[in-house]
Image (tube, rainbow, N blue to C red; front, side):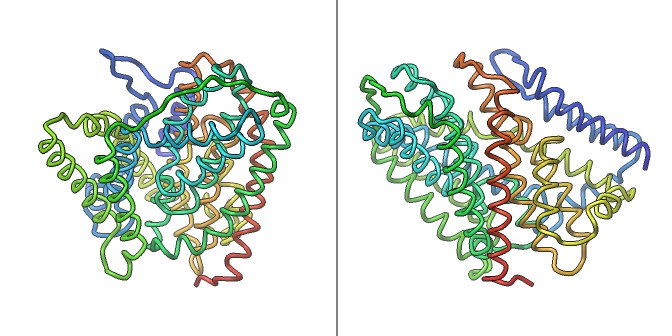
Length: 438
């Protein structure tokens, strides 16, 4: 147990350190995230010292069950590709610009429109994609209008990481925890609707309160032209995403696993666009963008963390964590502890670990599972370490030369996180009253 604890603990500490000190390195114009390299080294060490059984790893990676990490990765990456394709065609920037143009010089109006657009898009796509897309756009717009970008950057970040709770596809942590407990697409939505709406309303109210002084100033933005050139490809992409979402919602009724559906639509999108491009005699540039931007780093990262948690399970560390948390399916305890833990090790490793902890509770595990999902999303508010979205967000701000620091993030993040987390947990209590889950 001691050896596993040392390697696992040092690996988590090293992941956090790399995020704070040097998140990535550039090798021949390619940025390589160090967080997954560290996780992989930790998993290799556990194997080398035989603290985890290699055969059990293979069994886990080939098992025909919902907790298989390869299925979870496939589901997230294929859904991400559908979103990236629409982004490559300029849909998200077009919608953002459309909303901002209707602000008519009012920062309050622009702030509200931005929050709504980001929230709606996040529900049906992914928080990571929205943050990657909107952050540079917001930076350029604010420079153009000569206004403080922080209210809008936090507006985008908070909205994306709040409304990502609504559907299972909104965050890889949702996917991992929900599929680990065989939660269907519709059952997830039914249980998380009230907590997400509560959290969304409260987070918007707190944002407006925190940034009220900055939003009072007038702005005079110069027009920004954002157009969608290939409307045919856009229609194909929107239809694929819409149909995929519908089938995911009824997947349990048609007895088809969600990863099959998302992978099928990603492959179908590539086939349709290749045929469409051949007919129009043009290069499928958007597909190339999808292949370049797909989150491949999640593959070694999730598998490595799966190995580390498997080692924790084998030596009894997970049982100790379960006892520390009280051994009960308390919503407040698991919501708060998962939110805090995400900022110690990042929300994906936290979700893998908490999935194992919750499975040891026995009885009705679902309150603790849903509370952990809430913590995995809202945990992103506290520090940039809390989620991959935070890591990407801060890196983009550095590239855009926006004055920002770790302390500024915490200063605003904590104030927004606490009421949002409590409102989501309160909503979850009401949700279980309205829709009892055994």
